[in-house]
Image (cartoon, rainbow, N blue to C red):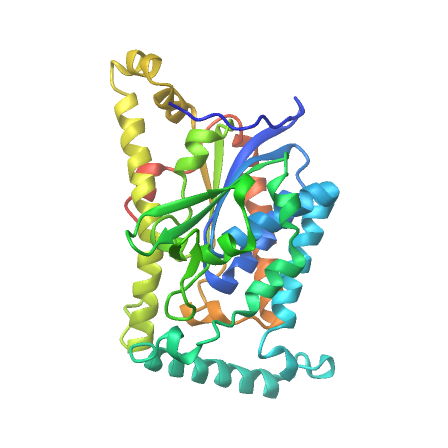
Length: 360
């Protein structure tokens, strides 16, 4: 039985849609760009948002901003958050404004990033965050706390939020809901276990939600009133070149792992839709509201496969302002192109072929 959440008033002229925001480190700035463009579409209302890791940070920033100043408030809060991420980048101090665009500096910075990535990959098998980071320092924690008003998030009546984390003891998905959300819960959703100590909440330890739901579609299907679900997927579904070096192999393993839970949910959704399409589907749908819900659901996707094709997985740790703004612009452009091509289908029919999507 579908759970009921507090009603959200939606003007009759607006189309409610759900957003499912995938995690992917600093590549979440691409999603920032997508959201910035979607917020300019006044006919769209975000009925529910499910987010994981960077997707969770985007989700809470959007919700807090909506309460602070509507659509423009959401755009401003998202920009404020990602600006702070860039300002605290370890490479930001190495890039004074008068050297921006200097090819020699950019070449040096690229070398430094690659060297750092190589070292971290070599160190991972032997070092633990409990050893090399005993104070559990995480600069993102302060940024989240300073830029996002969680009281506004918890009381937001303009959308519903669902934030995914992975319970360390069982490996099970834990979905934190809006009325309970704290900065710690968002940090749990983004806790990479080889970089940060597990986040404890009510005596339970949690790791990055990407292992169990990246993002989780289930709460949107069960608890949101919208019939259109837009997935923003930033982890590449396919890499055309097989990795040969250890760091590249580990990066691809992580990408596959963080897409696996989403692929499983898409397959389950496709299976349910196939079952409903059978002759006795009307009878079954009458007995079970969830069947009727799945039958009506229209799924859409904006992916970053083309926009981020030239970026390796190691760039997910790159947070200099120039890079984040490039990702933002790519995300905006992708959303703009998607709206031009598929926007008219919203409220009418799906634009994502689930059967095809499940094969990737």
